[in-house]
Amino acid sequence: MDSTLTGILNQRCPRCRQGQLFTHSALNLAHFTEMPPACPICGQAYEPEPGFYWGAMYISFAFSTGIMLVVGLAVYYLLGDPDTWVYTTAVAVVALLFTPLSLRYSRTLMLYLFGGVRYDKRYANRT
Image (cartoon, rainbow, N blue to C red; front, side, top):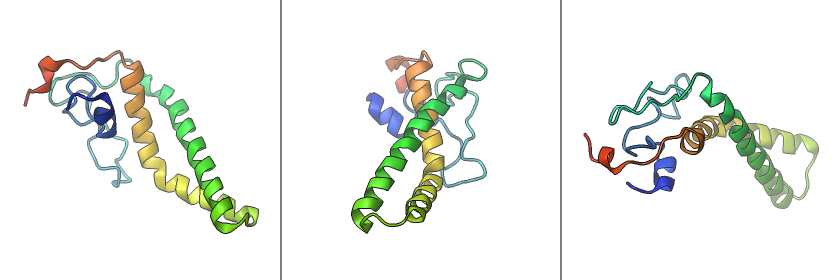
């Protein structure tokens, strides 16, 4: 699993691309944000510095904006420009449904892009 894109999509450690970034499923609404302190495979720390994931808010905001645009356009074209409450309800429901994935992928991207961690083949085949 050497591809960066595959590592991001599967939410794996940026160094070994094998260790999982999150301890629970995104469907577990009580614990979907929990991350182990380090990769269980290679030991890479998942929080490079205190407060590191505050920056993920900006990535999450971009995801939310994209969701609003896509849902708004879909409602407009599929339902023929309905009342404002239909747009608001559709966007709110879809945004709430995608919140766990949005948060998890914003943290994953934050770690991959700004965590200072690069893929290292030496760690890739450890078990």
